[in-house]
Length: 124
Image (cartoon, rainbow, N blue to C red; front, side, top):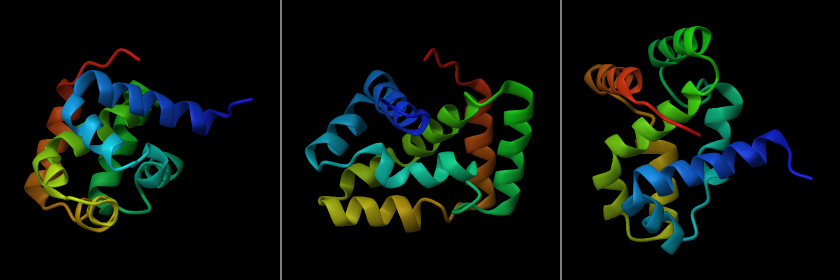
């Protein structure tokens, strides 16, 4: 039987497939499943890896829009860095980028991501 976490990882994978096919294909080619990078995001609402100011904005969104906003944040973060992620040419470099480089957002990147989250319409 699937648990909620597994279902969320599957949903994120399908959303990537539907909204960002090139990124999805790149992850598939290098056997990068969402649980490798997104599990801590979903379990801690991004608090384990991202700056506090960014996390507090996400909490605001969760309180207003509900938990589906977590998927929107993940999609926006990944799409904002799609070019850099696709340039990574191996499993280790992709995972390293997702776990160390991606969370070091500048103030401008945080604001751009929040604006994208606000505008993104996702049907799960």
